[in-house]
Image 1: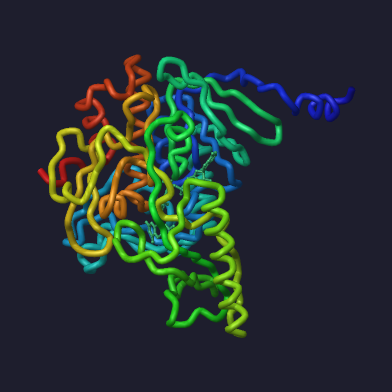
Image 2: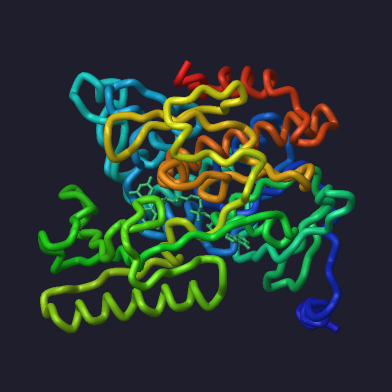
Length: 400
Ligand SMILES: Cc1cc2nc3c(=O)[nH]c(=O)nc-3n(C[C@H](O)[C@H](O)[C@H](O)COP(=O)(O)OP(=O)(O)OC[C@H]3O[C@@H](n4cnc5c(N)ncnc54)[C@H](O)[C@@H]3O)c2cc1C
């Protein structure tokens, strides 16, 4: 048998155990996953980042969402720092440079920017590889091996077949709580309305939001579908759910049909690309040890890992408790990004790009501390986590 035949013969059936044991495996290469991987790696952990697509950034690149929402509270006070601020700068590194962030306050601008998705994605990959993070693309996480509540290994499927990666901790940055849901931990889905954001080279008129910015390379981002998610409490005539294959498929096909109908009705409309991910805002999230909700606006939590303003208006500010990243039973897994435990208006804020980076950094840092101290993620010293995050640029106690 030659090498090609031998490799082909290995594919079906058996799960191959990979030789390398990782400290932290991060599921999902969206903004939360990238931030988590960076945070763990910077604590000298061996990190594997698994991504089912072929680029980094998740919704924030492949999903055509190219607005890095504000890091401030709307009154000029910066409330998010750390890796989130670093990634905001990175998003502008190679394209759509928007000036020096430090002067934005004087200019009366919020700490936000528009960026070029592909350029941001390449910049993310360059950074993560430079820091020594192993990235595995085109690889689907399909389950975990759990013993006494501890995830010992994650199972993947890709062109090489089924593989088993041993690990000490897992960060679920899948956007929809894949790790927790497959481990039968409590999760919940939300009702979404139809949305499709698509680039076009021609034909975006004022009827639709021009979001690529005038400085874009002849591209406009047109958005169909108003924001009437669960959090906004608007009536949703046809609700879409992102926690079943059928629901996601219907969302994608209905979105495509909407775009096609628009194209048929507007001769001047020339689409340039379609989103590579379902643009579902709130798919599925964990029901964590604490659920951040509307009543928590302005409230102080002793275990906060950072906080967030409201991208729509000045105030209110929410502190995000560490407990929103974990459930009761999985002892070495943390959620990050849009699938943390958050509901209503609070979910409307914690699901966004800056906050995904914030919770990603917190999860990656906490996982590293848990490994160093041989503790479960629920049992780490919260003071140590907070001191570490603060040293690494995170802004804590925004309501204190
Ligand atoms: C229509 C719409 C408009 C929005 N507008 C804005 C905006 O203007 N500004 C803003 O800041 N935010 C906006 N958001 C929200 C924001 O884009 C996302 O919530 C945020 O980027 C989520 O980041 P994440 O890393 O948590 O998840 P995701 O971006 O979803 O990343 C998850 C990653 O995990 C991968 N993955 C999933 N399952 C698996 C698996 N089983 N195996 C391997 N990989 C897997 C996915 O491919 C993906 O790359 C918008 C969202 C939508 C849908």
